[in-house]
Image 1 (cartoon, one colour):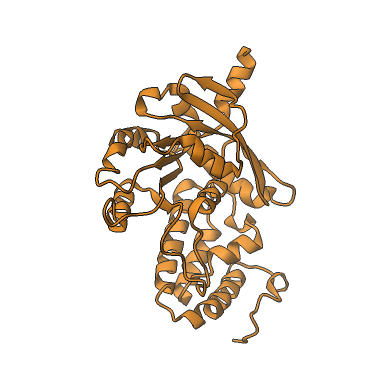
Image 2 (cartoon, helix red, strand yellow):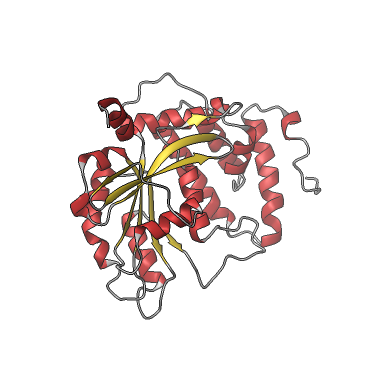
Length: 305
């Protein structure tokens, strides 16, 4: 490999995939993520570490990433650490000490702080690692728990059903804005802001010097989705102020903290009221930030305010 090729490979972000379960190899999970029966040839292999190519291609962007198999912390290198933007760990939930085997990774993750952290198992087990234990571990270490074959599936009548299994893993990886992102035509303005913020964090987490950019550059559909849980007039106004504010990292984090608070409030609403209420608040918010009413015409479910 030439020096140029090696440099290019090192700059491509990677998803580190590891398994503490000797009966479940990392390559099996990668095949599921890629939806392939047979893995492609790795772009690079060094002893037990392999890099597999993946191009994320969704409505908004494409991004070249590497799915990197790293069986243990002993195989970690500076190259992997510098390019890692997501971490996926599989564990054996059928044994009581399944989570303990992941302990060596905790200090590594805390040092690197990748954007996406996912804990994976086949399904939680009452005789092994219970759901409560797995969720407590995730809360302590900022992971998301994903069961590949959960016994309990989301309620089909939920207005916003959660994805499960490998679909949820792929969804979470698609939701990240990678440093290799290339925006598609028509989405450069909105998600370009997110890309700038992520790049800012990677380069210098707390000292982004980019000029202010209004959050109103986000696509209309994205704005309406993210504020659909808002509850009160005060919430709407606060969210509108945050959205119209400068695009620094602190403001961005406050925005999403507020969205989380609103979602928690909305969860107490009766099922039949959620969608109608979200719709009304979305429209009110859009008008509060100076949006054009014509752009949201036709979004009503049929019930007038």
